[in-house]
Image 1 (cartoon, rainbow, N blue to C red):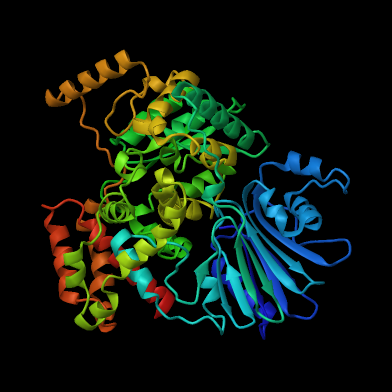
Image 2: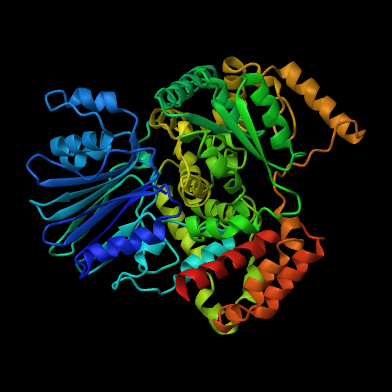
Amino acid sequence: MSGIFGIVNADDTESYLNRAAQRMIHYDWYTVDKWVAPNNQVGLAKLGIGIFNKQTQPIISTNSKLTLFLSGEFYNTAGIRNELSLRQPVTDDAELALAAFEAWDMDCAQRLEGAFFIVVYDNERQRLVFMNDRFGLYPHYYSISGNHLAFAPEVKALLDVPHVTRNLNLVAVAEYLRFQHLLGTKTFHESIQQFPYGSIGEFELNTGRWTLTRYWDWDQIPDNPQVTFDEAVVEVGRRLQTGIERLSSDSLRPGVFLSGGLDSRAIIGMVPKRDPATITATFGNPQSRDVYYAGQIAAAMGTRHHWFDLPVDGSWVTPVVDQHFSLTEGFHSWIHLHGMTMLPTLRGLIDYNLSGWDGGTLMGDSDLVNPILNNPVNFSTLVTTSFQRFNQSFTWPGITEAEERLLYKPVFAKQMAGLAFDSYREELASYWNFKHDYAHEYFYLVNHCLRMTINMITFARSHIEARFPFWDYNLVDFVYSLKPEIRQQKLMYRHILTQRTPQLAMIPYDKKEYLPTSNAVLHNVQALTRRVGRRLHIYPDRPLMYADYEIYLRKALRPWAENLLYNGRLAERGMFNADYVHDLMDRHMDGREEWIIGKVSPLISLEMVMQRLFD
């Protein structure tokens, strides 16, 4: 993935940059720009994939006081240029970032809009400044000890730095086994943190003083409870379409990963027509709903559509599972790697994915927009309800309290007791300070979307870049200013689709195969017909899952999984009860219980973490 890495006050600055680059160069099209301060105190470098930020970096101010690296891009460049009209014109986003920093110093972070990570070396004031976008769409990690600092877009680049210890973060382990991802800014290493969203970091080179300030947070979103449903449909639709058009208006080649859901069809329905037509791509079992309905959507929109098979025997997993781990470093369980196989082909066809990532949440997910979560009686109600859903509903169900007691060795169990819940409650508590009707959803966006599902973007960025219409600042600000009830049952979303992409509202979507049209008669008649047809076996029984990892693990992937779990190394660490790990695998292999893979898969991924990042 594109990003910036560097080190401060090291004995071998340039040597470190070379080693870190080698750890993160996954393909031969990766580029690296390196820079070392004349006094060797600071070394900085940018990793790229040759699409965004093609100009050689760093960008250095005319007085040589500032040295800047940028990864990512800005979406409001015209507005920033206008504000800087008295200064020298700039044509590159990195040059624009430098001009903005010269004019406004760290306050420029609040004026820049996009997906970015910026590092500025201020020679005059002997400091290093870090800034990212509101949502942290380019994840980076850092470690500080005394006056030593190292940072990178991948954890592995930090692991041979002398001050970075390899102590396992037990709270992270507890979270991972319960939720299949981490919370807050934690990593698996106690000494490494993720740089938080919407933040500015300032590191004083000589003293090691580190200041971390959040320049944007969810409480800055306005409140517009007076907006009616009809007004919301018009304005949300307008902002979504404006954002899509803005992100697809340059000369780079867009692509859209189509599924049978609503988010990608909304995007392809609103993308301006191009010649040649926009590329769309779908992966999965050819009988699955995603593949079937994506094909219908592509045909309706006249796209150049590509389908990538995922053979039902699971044989496609083993050639890509190691690379998926290398790119996501265990933050993303191996049961989410289904987009890997199409990337080599798409690298030659598109420059970026105009991603529908997390549009469903923004537009009103029924798991999040409901009275219990939007109007909780009190904080304890919210934390217990939310904990259960993160553990059992938002992805494959994870281990329960009883299973956790059986999984850990007795001595280790004493250390782990209650860690996941206590951490969860602590992380959620800070969101309780925001308006209560959206406190949980903000927590979900940061701790589920930006800690787990973003990894689908991370590994795709090894080949192509990404742009995010549903994370548009103006759209997010307006949607979360509305009363939550307006977004219930995706009715607002369906009205937007019906008004702006009527032909796509007449193609069923994947969950229940109902029409997403807001025309109540058409929707209800088709839904009734579909239900009756299912009972009478008139309609084909298309599988909902595009990739069935449960079956894979019982068949083609079983030797691979058992080699990881049963080779003795897991037992030797003294953390897990090896007999109970066998019991969980036996339950999964038996096949009579659904979703046991949600209890087994994080153990497999965690063992990969231990072997590759700790052993």
